[in-house]
Length: 376
Length: 240
Image 1 (cartoon, rainbow over the protein chains, first blue to last red):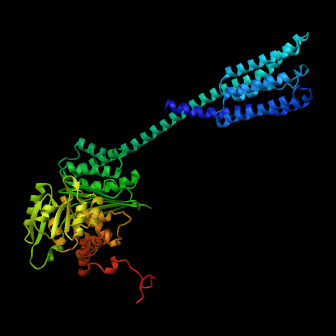
Image 2: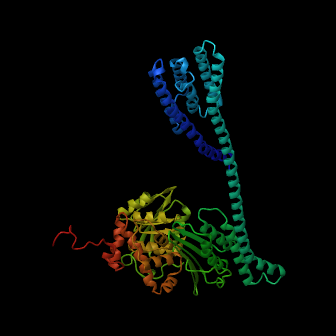
Image 3: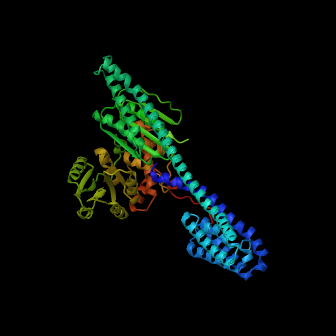
């Protein structure tokens, strides 16, 4: 599996894992805005210098929040920095319209909530931008605190300010950091899992190919092994006509088995050509004519179609004619050759179980062999 | 792979007149070879040879034209249609024996198709049969007909298909007859009937009509077997 595909696999998993974080951010932001800020505004309504400004600011926050959610979940392009500016302006506005006494109450809602809405806008932009917004928020708050208590109480207010800023700032930052770690872990886990799966499937594929090769080797040994052994030990005499026929047959089988593992568009024709080739090398002119389009056939069926013909073809003399008539539901292969060919000797009898039928006829002039496959 | 021994016993042409043959091929070797094959037969007379159809025909009328399908690199199938529409009997002679080509040639109106490897006996018998508007089917042609899967193909009976298949597999007519347990004459009939059905199908041509007429005359095929049957009760038939 290529590095590119592994990375893509990891990316999709990371995006799915990230979804939880996005949902959490949206729920917290809107939850806080509705459940805490609304009662806060309501309770401080009479205390505001300009109450409608606070309400308008609340509505603006909702608008920005909705736009940010659309960007998070549906990928709409929204102008992030202008919206951040809107948030900060509303923040300043609400601080300005809150009376000094209400500074640290829920009526001064904006500077505690801006962190979460800024998070919605800056979700996948890293911590730096978020920290910058929170620092700007803290500056506005500091100005507000200093303006709100020009006399004595300064130290207390300042310490309350610091606690407030820390409390409202650290949670969004924590969420961003946690989601970052989660995404990284998801990415690396997915990538290593994909790599492991790819390795496993390669191993299985190699094992399968190995098994097939061993099957073929078994057949080949059966076909040629005994004959070669006899020839080598001198028990079979090469001058004997029967031995020659057996050799030709074994050669045809080997050629055909080798041809089976080739990747060609018409495998049956390829295998028949391999059998024909053996006869041609012995000086027999062979016509191989195919008509029609061959359907996809199993290796086992192709063997049953070609094998009986190979046996007769190996013993052909003078001339031979091999024809294939192919239809989507029926394939007929035939061999015609003069009767000077040897007797039919099927050294490998495949069970013709009605899927492939076999005919053999012989008269004074001709030997005719036909195999037929019919779709069930 | 024997030629049609049954057919050679029949007389062709009118009385003792020899059949005039023109040969068109762009290979001089082939021209000379075929000419010597045909000239050896007393029933045939080679009147003109050449590599251009119009020039050869201008030399004089011929009962049968033996036409090479590939002349100077181009396939001459439209030439076949042209000649057949004018009633000139064409026997197409080609090294291309793909089924699609053969069927296209039949559709264009050629009287017979001969593959170049099919030898002298088939050649002579084909020309003689073509001159008499009788069908003659060689193994290559039989293969094209039996492997035809087009939706416009004529419907052949099982016996006709079996005869075509066995003839394509190039058993001798005698072996086909023994295999199907019928006489050799019946085998030839089945094969010829299949050929006639192809003359009925496709575009009309004067030569196709001649083949059909001769086949009905000979009793090879009945008119209702190849015509479209319309019931007397059909609503658009004029009342008697």
